[in-house]
Every structure is written in C-alpha cells, then in structure tokens.
Length: 126
Image 1: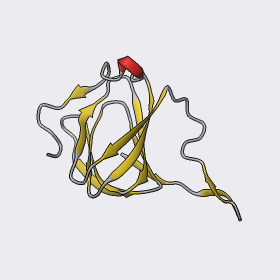
Image 2 (image 1 turned 180 degrees about the horizontal axis):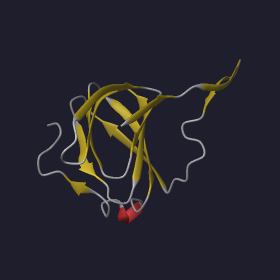
Image 3 (image 1 turned 30 degrees about the vertical axis):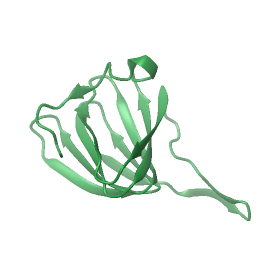
Image 4 (image 1 turned 180 degrees about the vertical axis):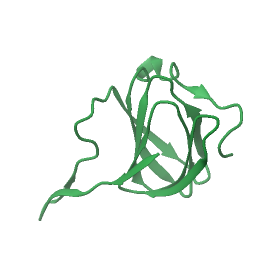
C-alpha cells in the first residue's frame, strides 16, 4: 500500500485544483459510496493496479503482500490516494459515511468489473 496526499496545483479566488493521478494510464474510474461500518474489497487482482482516492469521509485501509506478507493498516481521509499494486491483498472499512473513486489499470471496467477480482477466503477485515 502506497499512500499519497494530493497537493494543491493551483489556488485562486474560484477555488483549488488538485491532480489526483498524473502520468498513469487508467482504464476505468469508478465512484463508490460506503455507509459507516461498511467493508469493501477483501480481494486482490492478478492483472490490475488499483488506486483508491478518498473524496469524503475516512476509512481504515488494510493491505498485505500476498498470503505470506505482514498486514498493514492505515487510516485514510479525504484527499488521500492509495495505490494497490498487482497481487496486493486489500480491503477498506468505512469509519463514517464515505465516498471514493477507484481508478484501475487492467481488465476491471464495465461488465468485466469482476473478471480480475480474486476474493480472499479469509478476509483481512470483517
């Protein structure tokens, strides 16, 4: 799991501009909502890189490098971007009502959304 905090690229009397992701090819951008306490993911991807950008709220982000790696947990907030590389097990648990964008490079768009989702038999979080 690699977390970055978006920076202000431009600010004036109209507001701010932030780059969420730069210099990366993306195949799909997906809008996801969470109710407080909701858990999503508990999976990994064999062919896709996934970035999760927090629009609002806060979540616990869980990750593990494959089945044998150490578990990592971080709290992420609005403006944070998390990168999940190919093969990284990951899950998110909403600490409050939250909204994210999931940006993916790989076969995960439209009707193919589940094609590169490998569910974990033992979840990282419940």
